[in-house]
Length: 473
Image (cartoon, rainbow, N blue to C red):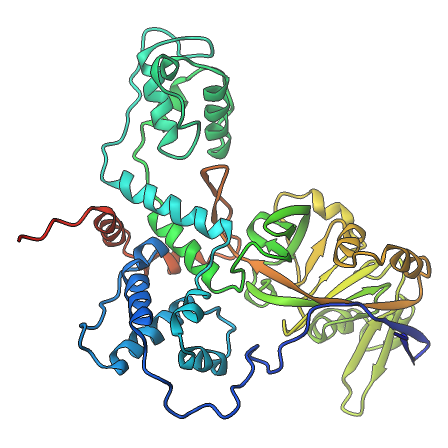
């Protein structure tokens, strides 16, 4: 296959072929059914059984259960239920045409169930939700004061209570039983120190009075937080642990490259500022192109609000700083910066599909990765190891990439193969069996959590877990 070469305004852009998966035919990602009948065939008993099972299992997904039609109800009643379930489980960017095609598919059950996430992170959240709902109905374990110090190496009944109290929030090992339960071992020490660290307390090897007081405060069961995390997961197209995909966890300032659910590459990132217009959106997309030595097209609002006022409406002042400026007939400035050490995009840019100008890129200001709060960009995601990411995205093209980067003033584009990429907004996740919280960097949680009735959801979860009473003969 031959490469195509496009020369524009003294910048050479080479488009290199890259084998990737086929792109769906229509913008909804669903092939239109040619000659499909106006009325789809009737739903089968298996379809209705699957609809019933999913509707009644909704509490496990952080939602109240839906009523199901009577056994003798017509298909329209069942299709109304199916439409509601599609509305719950379909990704936010799924086109209406794709939803319509799904609802017309027969059998319906496999198509509908394919929308339900099976990713390990989603399943871990589901399991944690069930556990936390159960704990809401149990009395909280209290750790009493003692005349002796509870520290590493000590055996005492209060240490068993300490172990149980930490386990109530997901810290420590469930498998410790018998006499070892009352022994302050290294596993308990690590669990206590992790609990202290997550709450901003100094880690210790002894149960000090401050830690004891904090441990005995009422536990706020995170049922609503987990339900919200599940909802945000369903809005993405991150459905399964299959294939290669990029996950950018905005709240953790971290990018992870996964293959079949296993991380192969991870790195810190910088995300958009907290102001509404600068926030990095949470969405699923695909990585289209990797550009070595990119040209930066300066966003128009940055030109109008910053660069032009600083230049006092004199284009030459920007040109002296390395920018290229063109002025159209209406007087609007178009500003860009060619590849080089002053380019804010650095040496690599990763173009995403349909994200309104949001993309991943290198940066020429690398010191910012050392900051705790990394909400610093105008919406794009700056990556700390762009070369490592490019090598992972372009397997087998390492030599081509190195050659392209060697020509620092030459822009070269590589086909990214439509790599699935997910920008994720999550303030809680389950890691190593415990719930981990992340900062609500854009302040989205309070309004979203107010919509969730945690006590009702917890009651529905407990009811769904209870065995049914046997029917009278």
